[in-house]
Length: 85
Image (cartoon, rainbow, N blue to C red; front, top):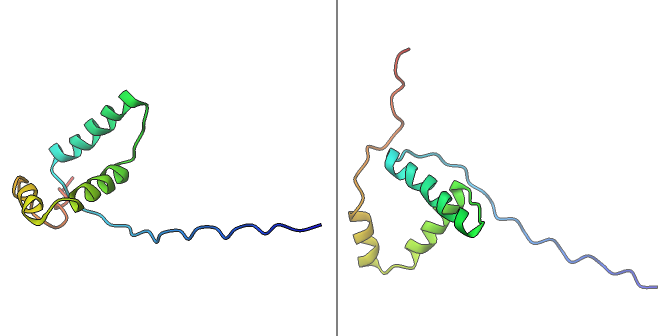
């Protein structure tokens, strides 16, 4: 009687938690993209959409990547100020 060994579990990727600020229009675009996926019965998390976008950007050559960034409206970095109640 031979005992089959389980194959080793694949290593999990180390996850990094980060926070950032984006314009409301870009945040709304995430929701619109999630809604578009309903047409093909696919749900997605915001993080999945952002990761897919990063991979799409990674495929661009440097001039195309720069052009994509140039089309963005600059936003002020840092956390927004808390408003007094």
